[in-house]
Image (cartoon, rainbow, N blue to C red; front, side, top):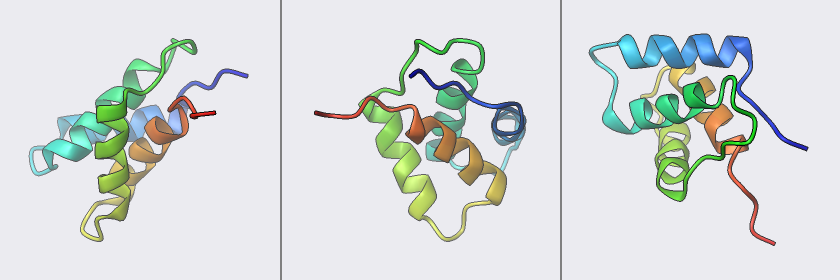
Amino acid sequence: MTKQTGRKAASNASSTLRSGSTATKSKSAAGSALTQRKAPKRETTAKAAKKASATLRDGRTAAKSKSAAGSALSQRARKR
């Protein structure tokens, strides 16, 4: 099953990218989520997944950024 970024998460990712006060890690995760909006076969890279994970763990991160980071992280290929 392939996943793609939903409408709400894509909107949150867009807001994150436009914000001037957002950290680079959050923007990287948001960019990854946004590129997967209409491309279900694309996967989050290891580098973007690491940044998304850091975004989710950071207590100072806004909810919209965390939504985008969660979407990007959920689209990371699982190791088997």
